[in-house]
Image (cartoon, rainbow, N blue to C red; front, side, top):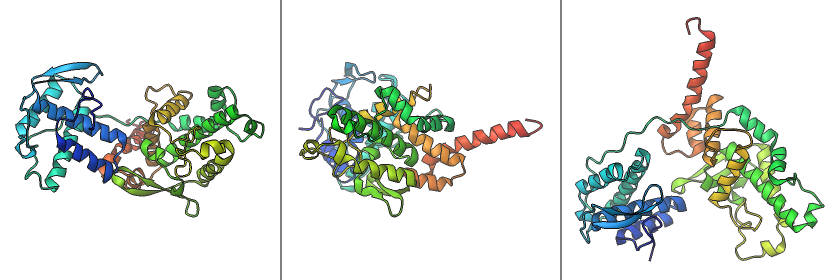
Length: 360
């Protein structure tokens, strides 16, 4: 039986959750992170409806006992009322003190859940009347200044040497004869290439991890990326990045031995980027790599892979890229999500106004 990672590992409280999770895994091809979020949110909602008291992890990760649930014992989907949903949201806000952004995500999870069963004919309406999303404070995307990205990629070999106690990022005939050296070399090449791809294409972390070798179109100089909702998009890449990806892929036979490439779990035949073990990258590996390298060129607190995605989009808009084009490159569903990147253009105009206008 499917288990909930957030709510004590107990069985799912309602069978409809399992059906919905199967749908988003199979048809929507949602990432593991998204699937976990849906499962946690829906499990919490149904526990709130079905139980008076239940155990769960709070927003800090501590295991706590929650009271004040409806204690219905069982419920059919068509019986769920909007006021029950509103009571749950109020609990999230007042008792559990989740942030407005997290509460909105949980509301969105519930809406998607009910919309699915409305399409399936299991319910006649969605019980979300007067369930109001929380007002969010204005938040600008965190990105790197151009001087920081220039420093990173101009000095990436030196940075690698500092981080790995020796520059092993280049193909070295001597290192090819030393198994440990080959593994370190492959790791550094992987780190450097993933940084270049993230900044030069703006792909999401999950898209980077699942990037296939077949996605590289050398003739047209582009990448085919499978994004959210199983939607494909094409991203142009520079000749330099294209060469780097092809070179990296060609080195697999030399740096990853036959014992690695011959294993059943070897992922390098399908995926572009793999670890020195031949396995696909993990989200934690990508995150720690980006944090490690960005820590060498910036003191800003946030150093996640998404910072490089924000940087990609911000630099494009700063240099005059059309917002619709940036939307397509990022794989955004609506232009509203892309408009946050106009902040840099506005800030640059403010600076120009300040320097040039006599009354500024």
